[in-house]
Length: 265
Image (cartoon, rainbow, N blue to C red; front, side, top):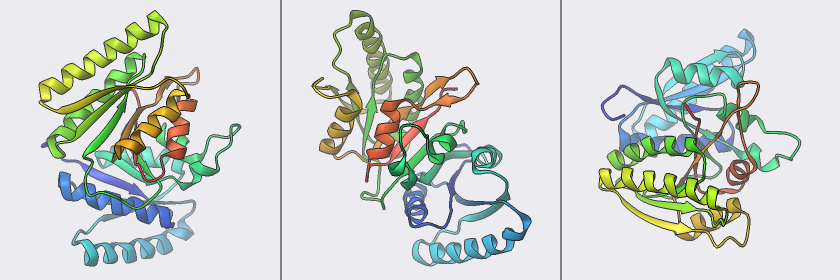
C-alpha cells in the first residue's frame, strides 16, 4: 500500500459527528501523507450550489486550523451507491465516516451507516467521537473461525508501515474442537504475518463468560485501544455483505474507539 497514489475519503452530511470524522482524517493524513477528499451527496441539481458553498467553508476552516486543504466533491445520487463509486474513482485507501445513527439502530432495521459500509470494497473507519489519540498505536484484531478473517492481515502492513502499532489478537473461548482448530489456524496465520513484519503483538483469550462481542469491546476498552479491525460477513444470497450481530454490536457501542470494517474481496 505504501508508495501508491491514494487519498482519504470523508463523506459528510455537515453534522457534528461528520466534523469529528474529518478531525480523524486529518490525523491519519498527517501520518500517512495522503490527501483528503470531502464528499457530500445531494438528491438534486438544485442543492449543488449550497453544498459547494458549505464544503468551501469547511475547507477554509481546515486549512486555517491544520494547514491541509481537502478536495471538495459534490455528487448527485445516493449514499448507498455513490460513496462506494467515489471511493473507487479517486482511489481511496480508506473511508472515514461518522456513525452516530448506529446508536439508534434496532434489531429490525440495519442503519444506513451499516448499509454504506457493506456497499464499498474500501475499508471503512467509523467513528462516534472526536479523536482521543494522534495515532493508531494499539490495534485490536479479533480472531474468529472464518477463512475471511485472514484478509485483515494485509492491513497489518498498513499499520506497521505508518504507525509502528502494537497488535492485540483476541480469540474467543470455545470448547468445540472443530471451531477451535479453525480459530487456531487463523491465529497462527496472524502470528506468522506479524512475525514477518517484526511487529509487536499480544495474544488474548476471552474469559468466555459473556458473548464474544461484549468481551472484545471490554478488552479493547481496558487495553485503551485506538482502533478495532473487524471483518464483515461474506456475501448473502443477494450478493451483498451482511453485518452480523457481533460486528453490529461493536460498531454501535465502540464509543470513542474507531472501528475499521473490511469487506472480503
